[in-house]
Length: 121
Image 1: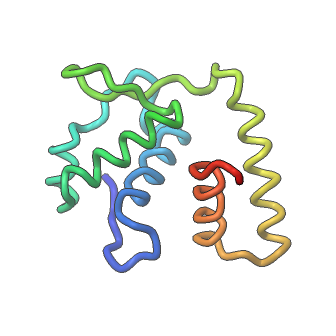
Image 2: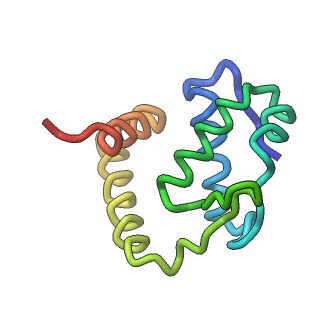
């Protein structure tokens, strides 16, 4: 399912988040599909439950998944959300500019994450 690189540049929760988001984006995980439980995935990957929970929270904050209490966490249909196309265009422009500058992928992700999570000022 997912592969965590303990020696990778990204923390494990980001690796989980990114791989889940990619699987959702490619359609491997379809809208309405239930994600593995936090504890189940944590056990499978050899991670702390809090690590997986953080990844799921970030996916939920991004509008990619929705948690329905004890029923679990499910993939939402983001293609119909009005912000999706504008966000994709912004991401593509950002990625193109980073490639022009020769910025490594990990650094670009770090910068984008920081810009999204930390308000300006």
